[in-house]
Image 1: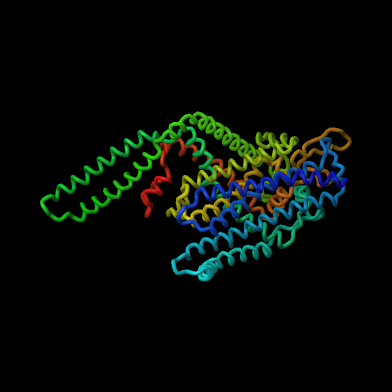
Image 2: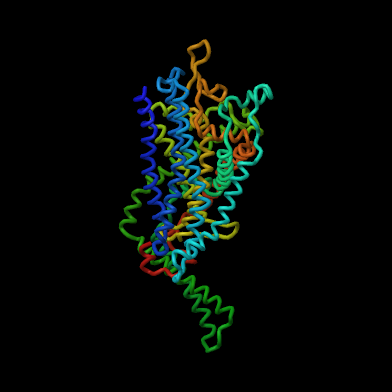
Length: 530
């Protein structure tokens, strides 16, 4: 029996280790791709890579959680030999639970200490600044974030939550929550749960802004493609010629030696700046008009096909979320219990596919990882197109090899928020898979088996630790469960709006993101290499 336990644990955790390596590789390539070549510091780059990796690894725990609870039971609804003992099952569940708390703790550390500290550490960079003075300055500003996290943890520990009822106190309410099993938690778990729930709610708001639009603009851009390089170059040359003529026409008005009016001087200055920008654009377009660019056109059909596939994935995700929310509207336990859904009644395409593929592990792991990667890349595409804003003020543009370190750190923090929101969306998207995997239970006095749901107790079905954490906190602080439910409806609405905006937009320039009007101190060599 011991060998069997070890083989199951190895099968669950070895893919997770492989995913950790792939996540570190992906994060390193992504951060280096967008980091400015001239403004980067190794300290901010490493911290950004670690923060992004921690975020992605948290989601990678979900398939491990699902695999372990699924393999506790056989296809006939009976417990596997290695999982017959309650102590063995509890030990496995606790190891996964510790993993979740560890990763969520690291996320909290990155968001409230590491990233703010490194942001202000870079801001303190001056020619005569020492490492000690920069650290002191960064720590001074980071104290605000430490105070915020301390207050949130304190509120989580002291806030009054709904008590777990006994069977004699409230039979009706007990019947609704008894299937959620281990409802008891200590003050440390309550504190961390409150912090993560608040951050996840902010992440859901970020999903509206970035992920919803990214799911639309990414496939549309692939299908539509960029503008023709040669044609765009001719347009720029024509505009440069018109610009020179306008400048000359203004100067000709003062050919007699008269002094130029302040209004015309300002117009000439603006036109000269515009001419300089168009000159840089022309140099970039000339560098792009090469044989390699012509060969790239051969791959255009593949980009169109891939874009169509991404649209189909977006439709599948949209449909699955819509069906889950409709199911919750009709059959959930209501807002006071966080819209918890005891049993899914409507078919969910993504959920059905993952539960079926779970029988051929690690196929479900691969599909789940692909789903997460799709949502993450869509979020990155949204950030890339929208940029980082503070209300109506654009703070940073995210451009390949041109993003300042502060922008990279801000992007990582936004991605951490989004990833926490994605975890909620994944639970909404795959309620059966993320709660019970492929578990079945055997009906009393019958050989017939049914899929597990919250209508069964833990003696018959083992719920995943992620699902337990969510449903337990939804019961104790129902506001978050209700908020996530309504945020999912808003997310669906913003996906539709995102597609409308993406379809109405014009094709991108072939040098999109390479030359901007607010670029300063860029050498010609750097521009051409960009």
